[in-house]
Image (cartoon, rainbow, N blue to C red):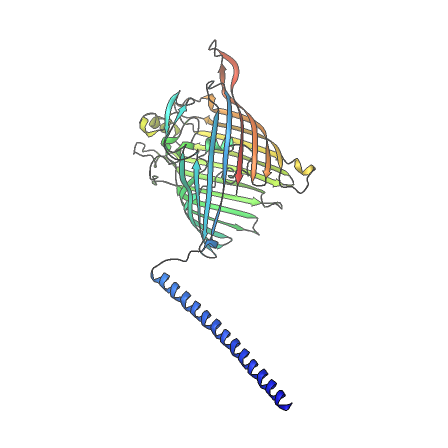
Amino acid sequence: MKNIYLFLLLFAFASHAQTQQEIDRQKLKEEIKKELKEELKAEVKKEIANENLSVFNWGKFDLNGYGVVNYYNYNYDTDRNLKDKLDAERLNLYLGYQYNRWIRFQSEIEFEHNGTGSTLELDTQEEFGEYESEIEAGGEVKVEQAYIEFGITPAFTIRAGRVKVMFGLAQSLDDPDDYFTTHRPEMENEILPLGWYENGIEFSGNFYKNKFEYRFSITGGLDATGFSSRGWIKDGYQQRFEMANAESFAFMGRLDYKFGRSGKNYVGIAGYVNDAAANRPKNDMKETAYVKMGEVHVTYDQNYLRFNSIFLFGDLENSDIVSRRNASLSNTLGVKRTPVAKNMIGFSAEAGYDLRHFWEPKTRRYIYPFVRYDYYDTMRNVEGNVVDNPRWERSSITGGVNWYVLPQIIVKAQYSNRRLGSQNVNPSTLLFTGERQKENTFSTGISYVF
């Protein structure tokens, strides 16, 4: 019996020893694997550093964007033959890359009107029925933004590269879920080069408990050859040539005060100044042509109510000389060559209220009926021999609805009645009717953000 106990004891001891050996062997394997992995990692990093490469990491990238597709039905006194339109207005993609905690790359690529290439536009407003070649607009793919951001502190950030000119309210409320209309806000879109991006540098930051936000930028400026009666400085945006002239830089400053709980409420002011004569393609104007603009704005988005408004004023130095120089420009430059005013003025206000919360209090699939008013005169005051054309004093009332199918997908519909300062003409008698000309538009479309 003792022999049996002794045998069992020896067997148990041997089994335990064998089990311990297996555990030790497994631990050794794991340690060797770990060491090999670390050595391999170190070798790869060393090789990458020697080859001046970077480690690819999807986690450092981010992608978002938005798109707009619209249908337009026109009824214009100024152009009774204007055809209805379908337009894939734009698809914008934002691609970013985070280098480290405080350095970031940000880009924006825009696809306009279905693609890329040169197009023709029948201009019945300023070109009197002539076909105008459009290289810079219509069927276009372009890099809107491409800059490096240095987030040094919340109070001081630097962006260098191709940056957005943050003058005006529409430059802030740029995504289609930021505004109610099917297309970009009318008044600003008729006067300013939306979207407005220039090569340069921007300084920005928040202060006083993040209640105030400031922006100051030094960027490329405008080219006075593109100024016109209808758009004032809008087409002075340098896009006709491969490179923009930089004889005169533009300076923009902006200050916003944030209030409320939503994080979307602010009131602010902004100013812009640039000598647009210096950036003309040829040295055909020795005088300066300083563009000076100022604006005040407010936006509110809280408690189911959305509202925004802006007042805009501008002054152009030596506008009569700019008009004379522009009148003698070559047709091949592709500019309007119409007289330019000294002063322009613009005002808009937009308000909408969500109805769906009355029967679905917690929903984000809103239904916003809205109303909008625009007034703008791009020939407010003229100087020298320039004649004020009343046609370019315009006011517009728009009403419509936004239905959020999802929080990121919006179906929009609206009707707009625009009145011009010029008198209407009876097409049968060719006599003035005594009424102001009207341009009425019904539009509907779908917008999406992601």
